[in-house]
Image 1 (cartoon, rainbow, N blue to C red):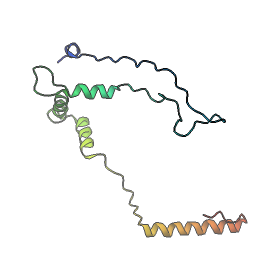
Image 2: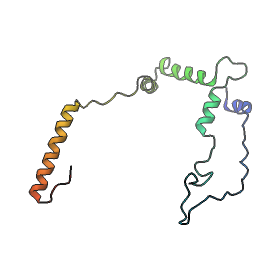
Image 3: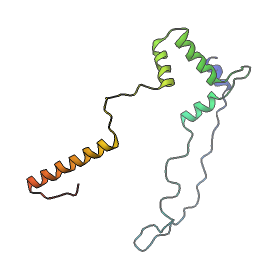
Image 4: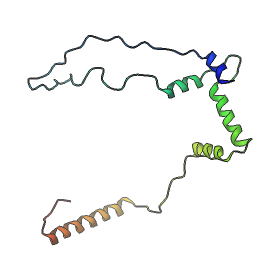
Length: 141
């Protein structure tokens, strides 16, 4: 399906802006601080708009008229065809990473709780000794 044909089928939903409410007075104490349970600015924060991602997800769920599969199913089939039938290496790698995840780095460093506790104690002793040598006293580390 060509882009123009697709756009002819799509019905764009519009939303009206919310109507402004009368400004509410937020109770404050004599120092100007918000009273408990009345803090913040009402209606503040990120606007509640539909994101591009949400619009795409919504469209991908639709099944075009006269078709048996959704746009999402058709998209997956097309990607698989490109990876397998067209033998496209980068697409194969991308799919593999999505299916199995990227390999985790292993630095060959395994530390159990007992060894970690010993290391922590050793570092505390070294820090305390350094402070004694410098004459700065203990920091409570």
